[in-house]
Image (cartoon, rainbow, N blue to C red; front, side, top):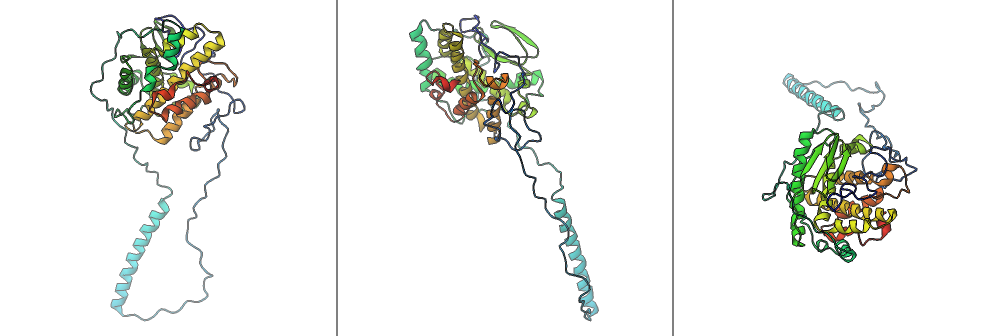
Length: 396
């Protein structure tokens, strides 16, 4: 969503909030130096050609080079016994054997010497095609209204002890998503891909949400390139958000620019992660959690409002982690892919984006966001994502 991205009260703006992963500065603000923010995932990835600006440069030893060439022999000319006399037929046999031996030796030597220089690339891993289960509804552009809280008692109940917290998702879920490079995909390609993502998201989340007594229409996704006007306001590019006023998700094609390196911008499942986070806000809205959170946020001081906003964001990060785990097997995600996604979430922290380690933001510090995402990766229970009962420092 995230707030300012539309209010639960059908079009009203939530005060002092910013879009996806964005603190009070503009998108693409330079990340902090290593002295400002210590990156706990700096060593999560293998050595890279260049040091990322958000992590200290690791020191790596040069690999030990293999030694090639013939082995050393003793000093020549010390002793050479004369050749023995042989029969002619024996000479022919021995000569043929010598030729064959030389041929095998030459071939073996050629193969041995080429081992370190062969540049033939190994075939890439097989990418899954989309495997969407049957029965997924079309995106709903005219969804039913969502629950709204009436008072503080109801707001407390819906945020802290929601019926959805007793539910779990299926892990693994047989809904596979093909890989896509968010930094290179066209608008049309991204639209088609994100439609598949919401189909898998609905597949994962509809059973627990309906079991808790709520409805979960499938949100449409609008992909845009420069700016977009919605019932929740107008937004520039470099953004993604869920708008409760029309229950739709919006995704800018250049959102990857917020990340500090090309490697992170090309992270596998990056766009899927963003949409999973926004779909998390859709789940919050459809279960009344977002309405309850907004009730308190709109009646709080600026600092308290930021705390409620961070609770909502932490929960959405956690729910996105649950989704990633659920479809990781069907989507062929590797352990390295999951580590990269954790690093992406860290770099969306208020402190990392703003360069201020002590910022009182509305999304959470990089370390906090990463922790909640990791909590979701390790859980199938929605109750594990209950950020509204967590101590305030856990959503800092």
